[in-house]
Image (cartoon, rainbow, N blue to C red; front, side, top):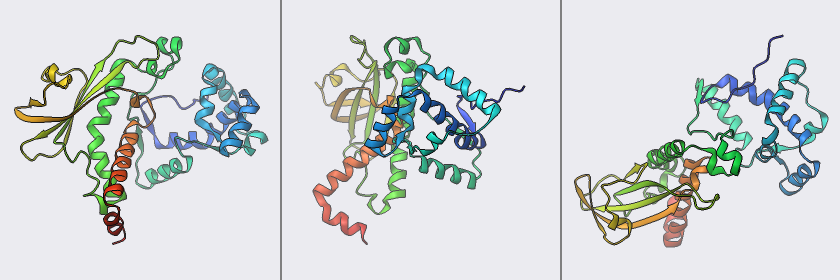
Length: 295
């Protein structure tokens, strides 16, 4: 008997693979997971949210993934039926709305987009470090974290501007980020983890203002950059020569890196930036903003 192949974890998928998996494998996976989760947990989810969150279910079944996969394999060979109990349960996803996902699939097919590629390096649950700590920080090798951060920061400005033009084009002049900066330099620092729950990385952020008019730019360094003096990091001096030009360091920040470990880090950065700009705008000049929107 030929073994039916489940959708593999990989970095590139054909759209038909995803559509088939979404319409078929997902319902069987839900059926198998429901059998292994305490009924009280399911009932509490429905009472509190009105539905059972697929992402939350996944966290309850990480220890017996192999067993679930084998059960799904056997069921696919025999039948596709889902139990009556599972059919009665309302399913959704808080982080990845299913209706939006379905609209994306329909849109891709209408535009003849046949290949979907993974953007970020994925978490690796088989890592020995994660098995010991069960902390999200240990799901990724160091190089993967740096690469994911680079993806976020090298695309942040363009994606932010694109979202503004698509959603609120009338306010594009009001929602320009970093209006007081010419450049934003990000450098990543590998830290010693004194405690298990400490994050492995921190970042320095330098907001630069130049004498000449320049287009805003985010410059990302995956390590500490030797061209930036330690006095700047210690906030002792406010001047910096960078790439042959003189800048004023009018803001400096140091923080631990946590946001990259959450789903959709670039989306979250754009949302945070827009929320901050809208908040400040409506406090400073809400009347002109409203009049602009209703023009």
